[in-house]
Structures are given as C-alpha cells and as structure tokens.
Length: 64
Image (tube, rainbow, N blue to C red; front, top):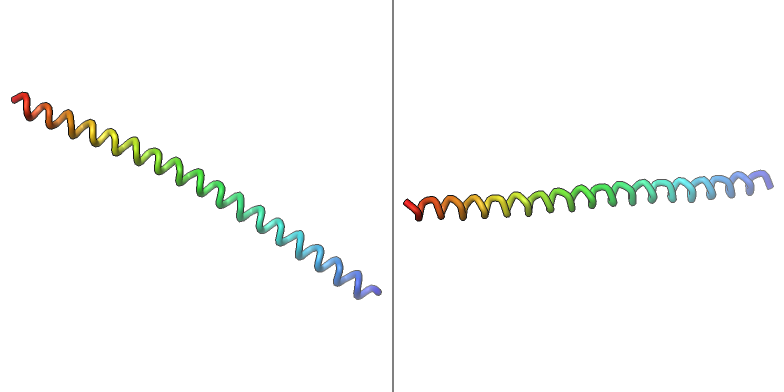
C-alpha cells in the first residue's frame, strides 16, 4: 500500500514536470517566433529603403 502511494506520487510528479517542461518549451517557441517576425519585418523595411536609395541614385545619374 505504501509502495502504491509512492508510485502514484511519482507518476503525478512526472506528469506535472512534463507539463511544466512543455509549457516552458511553448513559451520559448512563442518568443522565438515573435522575434523572427520582428526581424523579418525589419528586413523588409531595410529592403524597401535600399530600393528607394537605388531609385534616388538612378534619378541623380539620369539628371546629369
């Protein structure tokens, strides 16, 4: 009977730890996804700036 209680507690702790690890993993995945989205957005902004600068440069060359 005491052994059964120990096994049940161990099983519950293992399940609880597993849920905690899964929650932590999901939080990390969410944060990494959020950071990736931010970086990709910044990349698009910089690409657009580059295109604008290229166009301005070409216009300056053509006006000579």
